[in-house]
Amino acid sequence: MKLSKKDQLIEAAIKGEDFGELVNIASHLLNNPLVIISNSYNIIAYSKTFTVDDSAWTNATKRGYITLEFGATLNNWNQHVDHTKHIDCITVTEISKYTRRFLKMIYKGKIMGYLNITDVNDCLDKVDNSLYLLVASLLAKEIAFNHRDYTNHAATFEEILFELSNDSFINKLHFIDRVSSCNVNIQTQYQVACVDLKHFTSYNAREDNFKNEILSFFPKSTIIINNQLLIILIDLAKIKDSLYNKKLDSYLNKKELIMGVSDTFHDLYEFKHYIKEAKSSIYFRKFLLKKESIIYYDQIKQFDLLSKFDISELPYYCNQKLYHLYTQEKEEDTEYIKTLRTYLEFNHSVKETAEVLFIHRNTVNYRIQRIKELLEIEISDSHLTNELLFSCAILQIIEDKYNLD
Image (cartoon, rainbow, N blue to C red; front, side):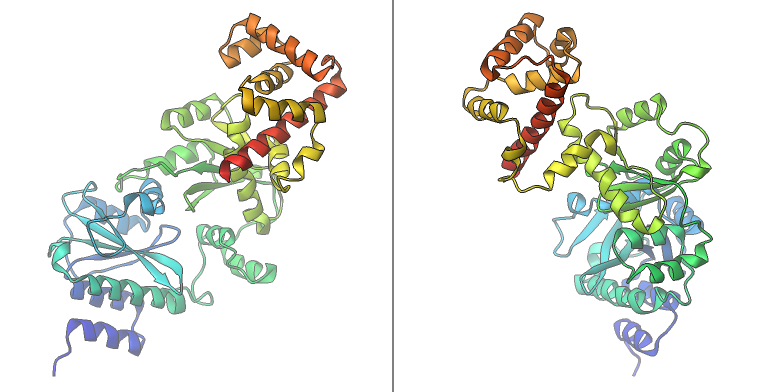
């Protein structure tokens, strides 16, 4: 008796058929062409069962990866889930005349990649959801056990970085063994830049414009997307010109993107730590008076440090008179502390303080005089200025923790 297409797929998997052949059989089962996309947005495989008259599909399969900007859209999965369907999927009609459906390929709770079905033959809703889920789970297991066999699969540098960012290595020796096939210097001067992509959406699946634009500012760098972050590993030894300039700032502003930049480091194995620094730079930007598009970890390092303290401990490290003023201000809403901090950060300039806070200079003078009276201090002393600025930072962290709670 002739096996059904579903049983043919299961039998082929049991017999250990080549991954590409499994994709072809799965394509026949769903009666549409398939593309299998890795976590690093490379194309692992695609079906060769049907002719696809679609330039976006052809371009992607020829170059071997999807565009960075559409990868970012997939990474923001929850924002684009198709709630009209009874399975966890994204349905996309914007790329071309064909509709595409994307499913996560999950094995033991981990995402192995994405399944892309394009409706060249059958309407996507004509296929039973259970078949989509079967194909996604079966191919996910194959990727986990076979396609990702590190002894046979030479890693791309993007895959190495993705694995580092997800703590996929058992130890450093495992990492060194894995990276040996990449011809990469793992001990040089690096820096990590991260861009928050939480609100980024693009259906450009044809040309990799976004990636090329980013690389124009960071030539010879490597880019991955993970956890709604665009992560750029910059090999500073290969960069001659200044990285961070007005053109980059203008570009980020235009795209409404924020970039955090880590400290420099020399051991690639520490990559994830410096992602955290760059990510922290983005998070703590809200505490800075100047809301710039590029934030360096040095600018927010004290906030990152203070945030690690328990909220109950922080008041002890604060100037006690200022902390008392803070507790009063929460009831009276006077904005004395914000004014003091701005005044101190701008080197006691009444003019700049007024401009930043959008208030009149007389208001600044009045508030500063009241602060001096309430605190019973003269704030011209440099040592006291540093103490008060540090205390203002503590109060910002306390306020942030209260708001989160």
